[in-house]
Picture 1 (cartoon, helix red, strand yellow):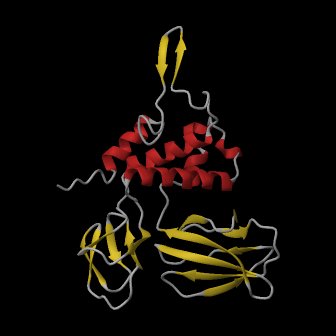
Picture 2: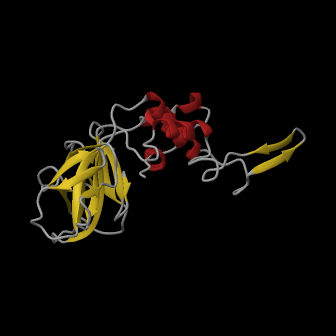
Picture 3: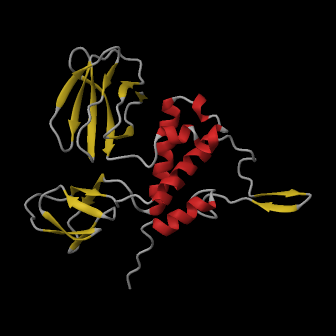
Length: 254
């Protein structure tokens, strides 16, 4: 799989992946800098390397090295315990009528990651364990974390007081500073997995209506199209319903 410089891809711990850089450059090796593991350097073979299976969740910075050992490019790999669905499920979606089997693995992975990002952003919740970050400016008694369902704090000097808040136990380091943590809701509901799969399939299909159209007149009357951003986070009512049902929801304080 080719990755572009300064981008992030998401891999599951159990899947094997051979990574190469999509750049016109002569590279010799990569240096892996995981958040939760030991640094290691791997030589490239024909411009690619087999990404090792570290612990999850983790965030790995990949430094692409030239023959002189200088860092030519960087990219990021986010390691999670699992995906919302497998690529085989996407290939065979709709009993093969969409002919997704003819698409390359990179295209399918891009659709899976895009659908995952859209669903999680709209739901305000991740259904796999991930590493999150929030910048602390040192104001207020509590730090409101950027994510919910926080399970573990990775940065010293803080303790959890709720699923989305932390208190400071040490003021030794200067502000502002980054606070890192593990977050995510588990186990994953089957309806959530189905909804993200349906959204990915929708993204891969060619559109059969003009861009921006919200409806269409026909002999049977006027047909109203569900439009993302107006009628919900996506153009699929069932996916929007799963977002509302399983998402973090609105939190009001008064």
